[in-house]
Image (cartoon, rainbow, N blue to C red):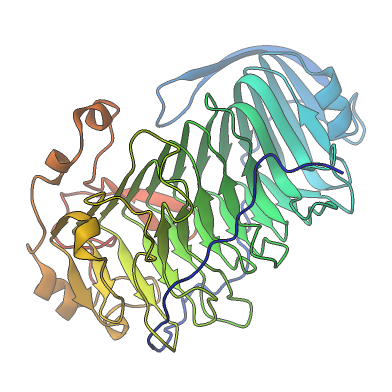
Length: 436
């Protein structure tokens, strides 16, 4: 039996919830298809040098060789190229569906990307080491770009699209659909994960212990421009990392027969969570009443525990009971939550005063005043103008500001799976800085 990298503790809800009427998103809830760019390399094996700058990190991935998976080339399977690849290699996988072609990647400084169209990695009942479709076990940097990971199941009920054991992993323009876990990380404290412009949906075994994205007690996770929806009785995003940065995402369980996510955001081990510029929505079928959980399991893993919620738009569609923004827990440290410039639906309960270090610039609204893309009506927008708190980065400690972390959004989410730069400083609370 494959033993889970970490304990899966199901979160417990403590409250009950109120009602609302759904405005269905105009885009619907079908999975989003992304076609990677075609870089124009030849099939087979090729020697090539290059340097790529990772947007947002300032770091460079350099490679000295290129290998390609091609049905008629030197490497016909992903497993074969994974076994042959060395450090500092660009690996290109041609368009198509690869069923049961599972692999482990142990190399450093590699970029694995889809070329020529959609590349679907279907587990088809297979897994690498009882873990998932791919395992990333590197000591350096790995970038994965342009793939759909689907249908991963294992006997332990935590089959992942990607099982991320070690290294510095960046995942871009990928989809994780109908897996038991989308991405599941290990617990090595030197590990970092970056997720950009990805979709996570329909994941989970249905037992409450498996999630769309589950981050263990690693050093840092950064999630940007991504769409989380339809977890099966698990969390849309769950992180135990020392530092979790969640910016400009759509974390919405939508509202149909398959909308049954528990928490939208869960930081069960505390740490520092910076949640800025997201649309967050709880569905009518959620088994949990609260929307965000913080330190619900324990608060002594990390030396600093703080939750920053800034410029988020938060909605609730559950139709019974109470519905708190933050799940009540005796573990939440006093004055550990900063709540600033959020747009929070009027049927959502505000956090207990003792948990809050700052509660300023937050405004209430009704869901009838936003459209399917969560953009405020002109009337709501005008009523909110210039009601935001100023100088909010003064609420951050110096060490976070030195890392370039800000509570002031510089971008906003654009559906599907991208962000766009704001052309001016924010003028209203919430994630969307324009009106209908």
